[in-house]
Length: 267
Image (cartoon, rainbow, N blue to C red):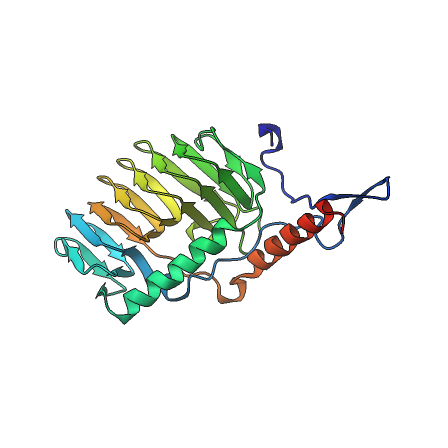
């Protein structure tokens, strides 16, 4: 898909061609669907930081929400790090279930139908509307990524990243017109590294590890399914989505994707 399609407000859902006749009919019920809703993280929702092996902190990090690790047990650096609005969970039942639920969310995010392919593009300087954005390999953010919620109650932004997510120093993710950290999800195929002073918004779910360098902040969550989370004088604040929005946008996206597949197959 070309960069010229960037910023489209709506999802197209396919064109039907049966018995040699080009119908050029937009599939009913999918035309005009916009990504709206939230992702159900289950028990992982209360976590600001969740790792599989270790959570390691250096400096006076400020974490709002739960901090946990499972199946590992090591959580170090608290203090000097401070946890408010949550507790530490070292391979207890809560952390175990949170890892299970985070893994389920990762799988579900990876399966969503793609709105636009951004492979090879830097996220910096882009303004995107609600949708699912795909990178076949790594993703880079240098500068500011602006996410325009278009006034929707719960706009949904999903970034499917095949390998690493890296941000340059002082980069940022900014939500406008109703978009905030609760609406943004980064499904990362390996590891994420946030550069010094990055102001990030969204939930990162990485299969390997997450590293926040000095002064980086996250309005969302930092989750590592198989590796460590490393902190250094950071601020991480978990968000709580509106309860009525949970999974609504995902049902629309999944239904549209299924309808598109049936059209391609001539059903």
